[in-house]
Image (cartoon, rainbow, N blue to C red; front, top):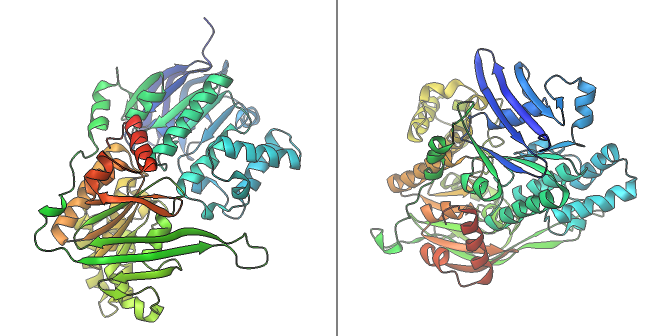
Length: 520
């Protein structure tokens, strides 16, 4: 029997007096797929980072991690640098944070290919477009010149995967490779990785909180909890499998009183590009979208990455220029001047997709949460704003005593609660939730979704939920609209759309979610 490609023995990663990885051992053969599964803080990402020497400053590593016979933990920096990218590659969880915002994604991939693979400029461009195609990035030639901020979260993840595969490594570390992807694209990406593994003999270590995905695509699943591998994995896996809410939003007829419209979109269109001499050609992102949301209800807009869901959400709040009619609380706001729109802003709030990037790292949490009050209620004293911030944090289940800490000291789930508190402090009527759980593990996802549902019941909030997570749509939504290529292809009661979709694309979306086991 040949020696394993990767052999980890008694790996420890210690910060100060705390061991975040404590005695982890496992092996991985050439052409094998294995998974490290666990909740946030379990140590799975720290384990993967240790293999490339990428842990944060102050980390003390011990044990062994042998790759093709070489101990990665004791290699000279020059030798480790030679292995990174060429023989061992990593696709990071937050591609937006690992990409340069000032360079196009094509230029960044070409830089890797020219540096690591020694390709010419023309060869690198051709190979980059080919890799983007392999990673299922739509219109790879056009996306080559796109900047990171012009791509959706799912498209950025595919760029990161293309970069990781660029030099045909022997080992790929995939850190939450599908966390920002809808079910259909997630299935495509995992099937692509599986195909490359079999075709190239690529070893893949998947780091994920998604237990069904790990079971489907990994031959061996290692479950981590509190920095250790759990014997057999069953005990730690059970909470992960059961964490996501399985209940359903109340049916349309169960609400008390007659529901009135709070938001109506009619033939709303959004175009991008086309401005300036060197700008890319103009294209239509939203194509005459019409939707209605009733008071106290949740409308979920679902679809693949790049379908236009976030653009729709931004257009609804007048955060993106659009054409067509937008009526909010019975008032036409589509063409309303910004000065006249400003008083309505407190009634329409948005919780953004990325809880890590949406909160200013320079401000303390109390200041972050109370930002809106400084604009909409300037007469309040500093003490009154601070008391309101404390109450908002209490409402979302956070300890108000921690409001003087900075966002970086909070977990992903806690940061999403802070973002909710920032929106709720203004007592809005409508809250737009843009992928509120995409960066969270199963346990945190369930906690946040239950909180969102409870706040709706208590405050009569109306939600426009943008998500690729059909389990989240099932748990929260009264109605579902399925979006593809800037158009609504199907809309109806949540149970009807998610149980028996009529449109072919909607059926494919639901079937892909079932294959990945997300509970939809």
